[in-house]
Image (tube, rainbow, N blue to C red; front, side, top):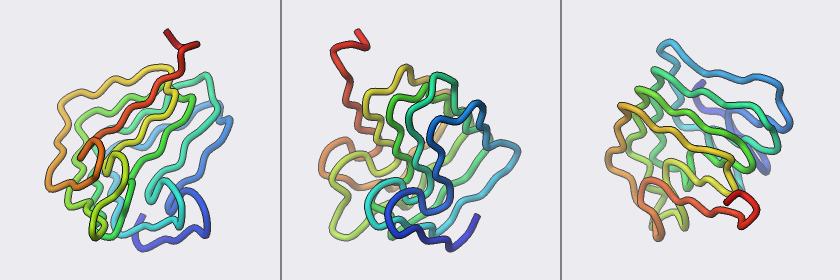
Amino acid sequence: MLDNYAAIYGGAIFANGFRSLSVTRGSNFQDNLASQSGDDFYLSNTVTTFLLQDTSIVNPQAANSLYAQQVTLVVERVTFSNIKYAPASVVGAAIYCFGCRGIDIRRSTFRKLKSEQGGAIHIVDFPTNK
């Protein structure tokens, strides 16, 4: 998915309360933007897992590539690169996980990312998740 724009959330994909969602097999995300959160992905409010696998994400204008709230997140063999909104994103240039139910990151690369808090990943948990 290349060069997409969302006025608020999810420049390429907005998913809320989904039953099943996977992005796999050589997917490519580049230069997607959202005005508030999740320049590539905005995921929220589901008890199921989002699988991001064998994917490349390049987004030099993004502040936050993947925003996840109340989601179980699996990231496998994914490359996040060159995400460095000028001057810098505020939280988690690649992944901002807010109250995620679980996070599993395997064999992934985070390269040339810039943020004020958590250059690559920023995680905020709820006391009820503990």
